[in-house]
Image (cartoon, rainbow, N blue to C red; front, side, top):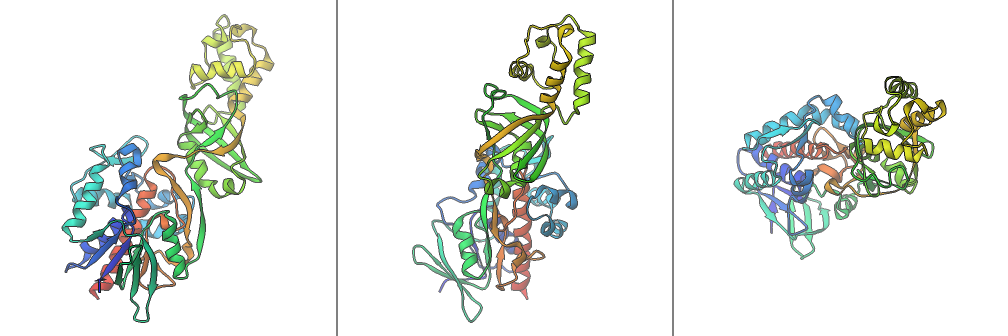
Length: 413
């Protein structure tokens, strides 16, 4: 009979970190097994951040940190007081990996290579004699009268343990295992995606970026707002502001079949009055200049030219001849262009879902199930998701660290 002190289902970031956290806390080496359904481990770690691995975010204040989670803010506050990004930085430093923060707060290994993180986790697990079995899709999870979990894989192998950590990410089989043991599931819907928009103003501007825009998304009777960088793409809009908006409105957009109205302020949330003043100022200083040659705003000349064409204002017109109606039309378009969202794209670097095991059924002091003693959860298998920027990984590190530590404490008792 193959018995273990802890069996981790899922060979991703949360799975490895949970197994390692448990083993490192123990005075004697525990018997730990990681079961990975595919032939590769740590695949999200490998591809995230464009192959650089956005490990975490340099937000070290728990109350501010939880604001980056559309679902799970209340539940994560306590855990982040116990293990937060500063602890993640220190952990990796102690294991030979130095992390650096970029201007936007995202943190990467100084090597700029995700393989550094993959190697660190795999090497640490090896040193701790943690057993890894790939191509081991778990098809059944039961608990017997002796409080022992029985785990069966697709190949027919059976394993036994008093403790199980479910860290299967958004894989459907993972939540089904939780359901087998009586857990309620919140149906998964996509989070972190781009907006498909067809509009003549942006149709030929792919690659045009904005340092900061304001977005107001109207989905049925609800309004969501975000500010931040944005990028025009071949199919619509992308960039941090759009991705954040998609995360916070994930369920509402899903219910509306990704049809919504988007009001865009292209100039960092500037008011209509200030926009008019900007144009009037240029008109007074450069009355003899062509309007296409003097852009009153911080966005690119390429976008300025497209805006004039969109509004049917002659680009060869002199500022002196720009009438009040045209000035107001420009100001209104700059501060409130109405676009129709008619679908979603995929943010391939960090595909995330909203949904998973119901948060109310988990004790967030330990990440143990409230329904089934010895069953733990970590990462995206829970109905918690963060915006882009290292927040989903931080949720994985924090949850699996708490679970691993609690399992170790029980094993030593």
